[in-house]
Length: 90
Image (tube, rainbow, N blue to C red; front, side, top):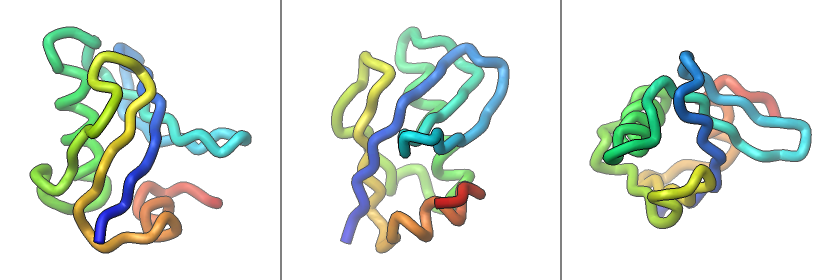
């Protein structure tokens, strides 16, 4: 079973951080610039590191060239478990 999540990425922010805003949008702040796939690569690496899973279990299924992305996590994981591993409250 997989989990598909939607995130909004903020590249070139100078930090790596996950934030769940008051409207329920999961935001990902990363250091890389949005050029030549650098930001997408960092999003995958940061998510894999945060969840303590291999990078190959994470796929960007839409939004490769936009800040809003749909990401498939090929691991049995609930949304609650995801938020817990990202240190976010629901």
